[in-house]
Length: 310
Image (cartoon, rainbow, N blue to C red; front, side):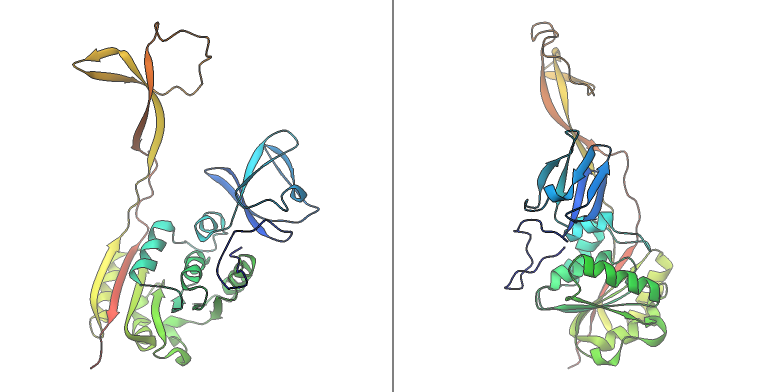
């Protein structure tokens, strides 16, 4: 839950309470969102965890089960929420989201329009970026998706920062009430070029638009439309490459011209009594290598700035 303290600043610097949303971290690829209920329990492969044991502990605490297993209770930040939310549509991930927020120049107090709410991954990060005095107005043509998004925003505590509307932006455009008021507009639509003229009318002078499209043909068509009223048109593709950091044993007995040979990583820790430094002299070293699993193409991000009318 994105918590607001009395000064209306987002903060997780308090203890977990009954009714809070927490991210239960089992391992780097296994996390889930859980609502804390005093009389409830969580059961997983590590044992049974009583919610009552969680209440009063700070976010980030390590809690133990009846079997001695443990999990971590993390605050539901937008970064973690993106990893655990229900996928109603394809979502944007952290690399694209951070790039979007930076290039749209979103800061606290901004008014942002979004079309294509989807699963709300980007919307959650937009809400944090505009908090505490800004607002995000997001639209989706699918009514049930909009209802589900509202429920998620209430769970995560950003419902005061986000307004969800049901509207076909491609066919109807943005509501006239936002004419000339938006600092930024984000489009995630199958035919974004249909919504660009309306988006241009909603933007303030020098406002910025971003369109996310999975296909380059969509980018080309959008850029053709943008040229009439926008400038500084740029398209990016964000490719994220992860690295694995592991400890290897460097075999000091095999040295050739000052170069040592690394032995392959051992999955099991060797008993301290086996062997000695004299029998197998080695020293630990931290090694980095690209991950075998890398996320490839997600989409193209096209940015453009509204031309100033003198």
